[in-house]
Image (cartoon, one colour):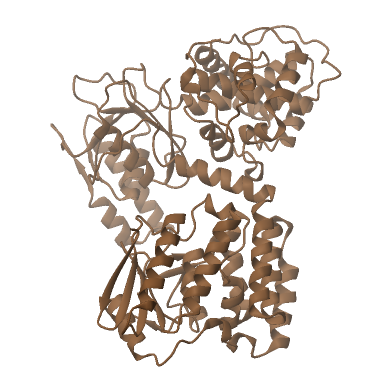
Length: 622
């Protein structure tokens, strides 16, 4: 059971047990409904307390459930059941209280919060609207302006924030569950949120706030923001049940929108990129990093680890100079007011020099190209010199969202990889794995875009036309503009690296006239998909969703498009294949279809809705 029921005298305490954040999956919703029905039916029960285990109340619905009408109806029914209880129901709020979890809290008759509790209705970020009657209950408590401020920002708000004064009935000074039990025992009768009218005390001001916020909604906010405004307006104008019915209808419409589908796709891609494919999870609490080598990246890697909260021991001939450089960087940040002195001191207290040996709990990373002694290094930073060397690579050595790639030969200790994953995740990175060496997944996709542009130029299109087509596909990187900015030396290195990785020669043929019946934008899209297919078949990239993440996160592809493979499923693989065939390019190029095209089409599969198994294909160069 995902809900634990116990008695505290005459009060029933129901605890959601679904780690890590007590999400309201179908099973949890069913168990909670069953446990609640049994609790209020028990003789002598004078109240119910709802709480969550592991320091969190509930993170609400998972990504998949957000798109399902039955899940939205389940939450609405569960909230109505809680609110209709004939005995008082108190929500004991702790940690994250988000989405449908926050809707459950609103349906309770009172809410006692731990000082660290944070409430959020983040659905707008997924181009959706809050469910479970939240758009009707919240404005009844705090009015339109404050309710819309919370719902349209989607940001977590501390339970102690004045904006939630009418939502939170008390901040617990000790055990939030014990104080919620005491509060439930003192309540004479249930106080239903749907009957509250404090937020409607000035209907004119309510509607004025609605108009003001409605005028501020931008096109970028999309249909979800407008739908939230409409639902909150309904709270004043229609009876409660009709307002909830409209909320549900609007929620279903939003869930079917292209914007919501794209947001769900990228959210799931990011979720997958919190772990490595094929890695068995290994419990690991070590937060010690041992760094060494001769690379220019060493100071930046030291700083990334310290910023992430790890203890760092630096060894090797450049250890002292690199450590001094990090201290200098921190002092410069402090002088600019970007780093408090106490934070600088705390981070530098975790930095030490190490002459010999190593911490067995540490992850060891070497920078630069210096040869490694036997048993000396565990991983190398950057693309490894050979595939027998475990490696980790960062798109940028700065804390925050970005790409990290890990590669490891067969037989690499899972504990080592788990430590590398923990380090990268702690630094806020999304994780990719490549059989061709860390750093080569992103290189394959980025340089593949340049190679596609060069092949299209050989096929007869002009550079300006190709850059315009890239813009139409949502690429912030215009390939020829980017290549011109790189300079001839770096460009030659990039194109050569792509050729070495793929086995495809560098385009050298003289330009010809482009085929008149081929749309250039679709030809570039097809070339990008062809590059991706080749990478998946060769093991350069392990998951289709990783390719879309590389485009969106690393290359700045328009996030509202979802990535080229997501759009390929929408367009259809067959039309894209026919486009490439019409270009009639030479074999072994970005414009020459790889075998995976026909295999996927013949089996009626694609990248996401009917995913093709690339592991079943022999990973050899076509």
